[in-house]
Image 1 (cartoon, rainbow, N blue to C red):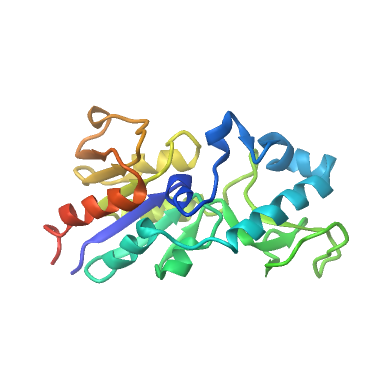
Image 2: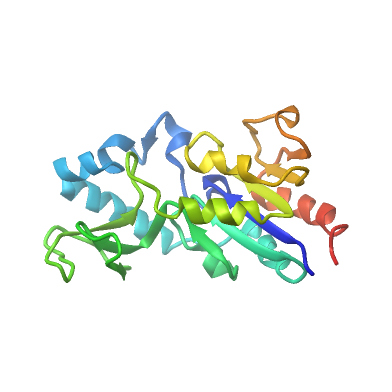
Length: 231
């Protein structure tokens, strides 16, 4: 049986493709306070601003491509059973070719009803006030905003518990509840943490190896290590 690898990815893996993270600029995201553009309250107060903000993010996403960090994870599927849990709302893992992806914080290329989170549509064009779902409610970005429940958290926990190997790439490990997932791995599970500025140290977790590097070259190093596990 092939070993199970669970990968938790954050904004750092997409940064190399040209997508920015709000944590790179003292809480500002493309010049906006995240509380204005990434909360239910912000949407209620100024829906035009919020929708235009995500329209710009959507346009930016459609102009970028996966990087080697993404494609190296696809290579792992040749020899391992790989599941990716991503905090990212982009579709770069899908474009790269990964098969099993759980989007913990939603997807930028989807929108949903403001009243029914299960009424979801694929969406690549601009979204404006007056675009309605079938239930007559305003469509909103299919994004888990600050202060909202994370619907797929239980699924992500269940996936993490199955890991024979856990890989964490490009995340600050400071955004909860996603940061708590590392607590759910089985005892003695090897953990690899790839980040140029790691926020944790190897003495904080058993069997933790830190690769202090960006996603592309860090995953190159990781692949060299992991193939001793190949069955």
